[in-house]
Image (cartoon, rainbow, N blue to C red; front, side, top):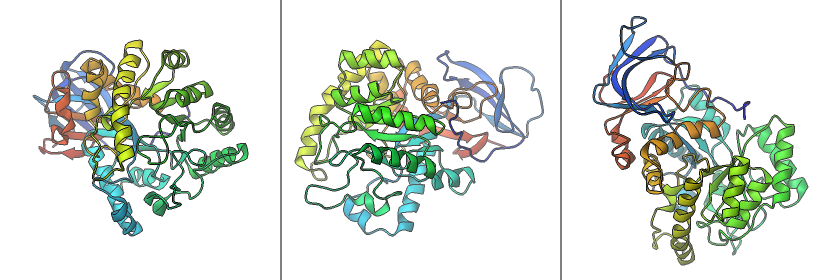
Length: 423
């Protein structure tokens, strides 16, 4: 994980001072009123007293709450808000790209300064953000996801029709792997193309009509094969879509870095995650959404209602046991721009607001291998910070509304400044 790519964004040169904010730094420490000095995109000092240097810009943050930028480790930015399969099939490639850029803007303006896209984006979007061509969070990308024939990543439906996303698939035909040779070739193709993380499916899913969370996907033996092949090629983390218990066990025993969803978790699974240090990304924002019978097949609606109860109980038990937890919303299914909903859901699952904010900042940065640069407000780190007009510790549920993120800075540069306070 130490070799993780640090996704870049344009840097604000010079000295910026944020004055009078209540700082909640993401380390787990309590709030304090302090000034934050930013020099050439990095945090230089936190405290009160005389300035170390004349500021080129000053941000009066009296009455606001300063936190690290949120790190959403499970998003799908190519799935725009309000999209339907029928509408998607009528899009030109350019429309699809612009809709994706809009999802990225909404995500950034919701306070998410770094995100991990777990199937859909190509490295070209990461490079476009780095070049300042489009607004969006710093990006790690999986490009596509892997499963066996008939599994969660198989786009072929029972009647042999194709899921709409295949019209815009970054690497056609790579996602379905059955033999060991296909597994190795897929890993090599993803590394060659520039994936930062590999997304695999060791179970089926709630949202797909022809498989179930209890169905098994990539087996433990092939998970180990993927881990070994990635180790030969400089190392990459593996994120495992796993909703049912047996497939989740296969993922954890095989050596994945994170378990995505984890909607059914036995004591054995929780113990294995604690022993191996596997991070849980519970995606409670998506789990908590009520299915729309007008848009989803009846079997999908029934599956969702059944698994909601299991998922909430599993998250609560994992948190009580001390399993590492990082923020992941599954945005794309959950609306883009409402990512901070996950903070409130984690509080509902048993975390304190301070713990939930830590999970949504520092823990996310650790999962991405970027904790030396992101995830907390500390001297030397990149100045990816958000200023809120609601208190994250007394009203975390209000943070879901992006208007409460009054300013968002990436490397000290104002990506959002609703009040025009910088100057």
